[in-house]
Length: 252
Image (cartoon, rainbow, N blue to C red; front, side, top):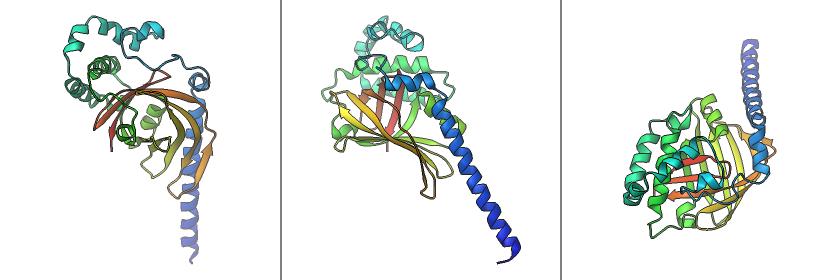
């Protein structure tokens, strides 16, 4: 091999190592940049029961700001809620979600949360309201919109990234993944417990950065919590969790 070829190979290797180290540093920085939220995951959840998605939620959990405003608005439109069908409300929700870039620098969160309140009320009339059974919940879900800061940080920081959530009720597992454009993936694995027809509790079991060559850089998993399925249909799922975040995903 010529000296120029050897030098090129060495430079390519150094570049690859540098990119991996840079990505690793940014992931580690992310995991330590939200201390208050990390502590919340390891302590008692801000609300001791799943989101009831009704007008009392903001009073019982004493949540202020956007979520509180959306629920105060709901009280003045109870008649509209009763008359709405889940499919009609879902269509409205998806229209707004598609205009909000997955929640990155969101300008429509209050509107989205308010529509989800309406969707929750409309879904209560469904005859198939068990949203945690295997046939409905087990799937690979693609992120459409979220208010979860850590995920949004990654999606904004690494352009072209896509987030997925994989749930297997029978095996009691949940996996969250952010797939970066270069083939690397940030993974968080959890074990789950089905609490009732809407609520699922989870506990992190492992986390790490998986590179495209198969190398895995582990990160100590921290935390536990729960999420409550506001709506689960053939195509879409809407959930709220113990940290006050909202998730909207599409079945793959």
